[in-house]
Amino acid sequence: MRNILTRSSLFFIVLVVVASSCHSGGDSLKEKKNELDSLKTQQEKISDKITSLEAEIAKLDTSAAPEQKPKLVALQTLTAGEFIHYIELQGHIDALNVSYVTQRGAPAQVREIYIQQGQMVKKGQLLLKLDDAVLKQNLVAATEGLQTIKTQLAYAKDIYQRRKNLFDQQIGTEVQMITDKNNVATLQNQLDAAEENVKVIQEQVNATSVVSDVDGVADQVTVKQGEYFGALGSGGIKIVNNNILKAVSNIPENYIGSVSKGSPVIVSMPDINKTINTSVSFVGASIDLINRGFVVEAKLPSDPQLKPNQLALIKVKDYSAENTISIPLNTLQNDENGKYVLVAAMKNGKLIASKRPVVIGLINNDMIEIKSGLKTGDVLITEGFGSLYEGQLITTGAQ
Image (tube, rainbow, N blue to C red; front, side, top):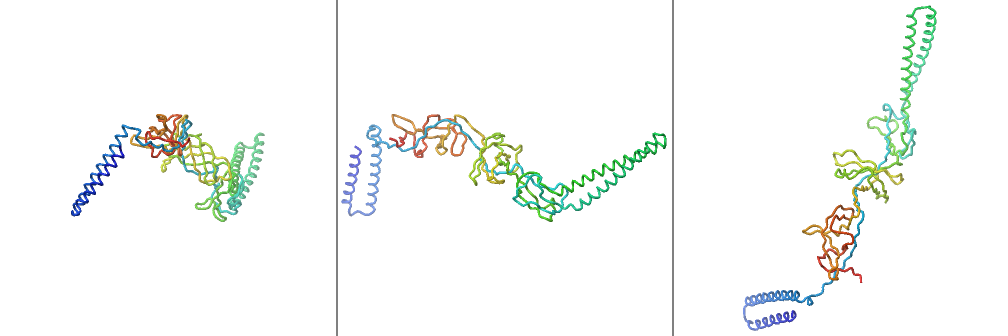
């Protein structure tokens, strides 16, 4: 019936055009344009009528409607599992033991340097020798003064003992004996002070030999011979122990309740293509006023490829959920009613696309947690869903 209506309408239009052309061969150009516009209007009305009749016929006679062609898609049957969320941060590698060598006494001029930058050093190893000439002279003088006091004390003790022996025999006066006794006590006090002074000067002399307090590598040696070591603006020595390392980063304060000591951590070093699983060993107790974050550290095993200040990508686990559905992030769609996904469903023996509203949770990489709306066994459309609509026939291409 559709074809008959179309052919009849077109034939009627052609007859009208031909007849009009023959009749008005001598008419003006304006009349011809008006007539053409009138015919176009009639054609549009006839076309709209044809479309309307086709739609009504399709509703009354479904066998007359063209068969819908299924769209090719990819499917995934959903299963529940553990969903883990990580806080992804940028950090760096640092040494747990870093020693900045300092002088124990007053700044002094460097006489000798016994190490070079990059050299391995042991605890107690001599690094620098500072000028000790004046201190050694003071030590000699203090030692000689100490010996003099020892001699005087020995003589005073002998005098006191003699005086006491005579007094016991009732020879001499008690005043003389007490005076000799006080002389002994005074010299003893002087001897104690002199001995302490010698110890102090000896310690000052020893401090001119600067030694390492830790095992490690001389990471920085910027002091030079002739400079005053320990003076403002002078060079120094930095010893780094690479045997005990840590990954360090700063976490925004809104995660303060999600991260604690022992939280699992994944540390990746992209420059050497290495990943290490570890855990949080330290959580800062305060929030930085500038970046509004807190420090978190994770100990790392000894590795010659790891260096202090090396770039590290740190992922700290802050959330996990058991028996949870998670789906690829790109399958999530939005409409005026909210978020939804398309799943495959059977209807009248045919596979169709069905819209399923969902409530989402956290995102981890390219996966998103589904709080509600999907369950185990649902078949998610993972590819070809872009132009699908509710109830559209779909196929996986499998025979």
